[in-house]
Length: 381
Image 1 (tube, rainbow, N blue to C red):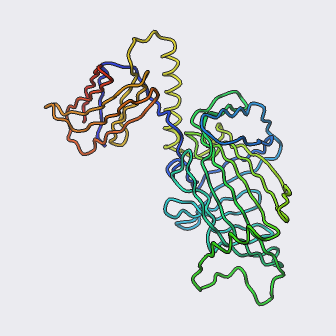
Image 2: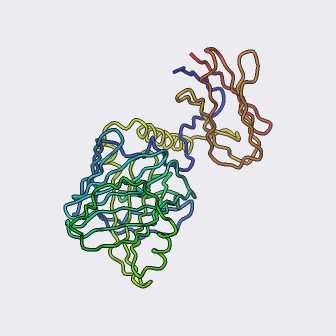
Image 3: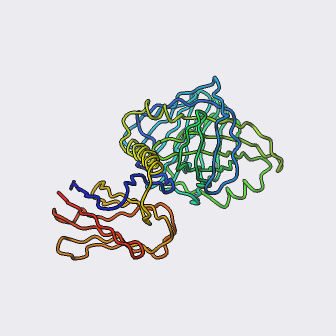
């Protein structure tokens, strides 16, 4: 990988990406070998969605009920998540994570059409949905037939205040809404519901919608999860289960759990991707503290240039709305790349220039804000 040396001529260091959180496979896909302590906490009653939320969880109390959640590989394409005496079988397909079945001492379910858990990437306002269908048995006595629809929305973002008073920025909340139609009947002796049918399976989405809308009984599961930049797994989650009988809701339970950031930091095997995000967040805190304690010149922009995986990254904060241009030249003065933004609002931004294909040598990066120009000397080694 090529190396970049930057000689800062004008501008303050600005090392953190503070744009909104996005979940993706590199940072948020479960990993084999990870173990988490799932702590039951005071129930969190989720508020409405939207951006710029402030979730104050300082009053949350940890309860005595704790569970270990661990992930183990099975073969090349399956991860088993084990918690509370139940094993969930996960598979990644394309850009999505699915549950293909689960089992515990009383219940066995295998999905003919797997259940969607997450689709990547997902960011504020993004919604995905999918249908699922599975069969199994209860205590080898009752056959179970599950059909349903899952909708997942990144419905809120903002900052979160932990019970110890620490504040975490760039938090994204996902909301999973699952409607389930369940049939149970005595198991026939000649029937083995755990066998997979060799006939190609086709899910009937219209039939599932009809059953959920018209049958006298169906189950609703709602899950809210709070994800923070720099942590692979959600920090908090609330799960609510409701049974509808002739359109009348009967709440089964509502419970909340915490996967504390300190435990994700210390207890997980080395997580290079999220470690880098945490380091960047700490740099932002240091930068803000330094900026607040110094008399800064009256300039319209603060910025820093970094390189990561042959990407030249320009982090900057506009103090006021302005036109901005970011232009890369070779030493002969030939323009290689240009990014132009018109009437860019004040705020924090990140731009990336691909430099992997350029030869070693010296380059000049010019940043133009309104009628002010700033220059950086870049050396690619």
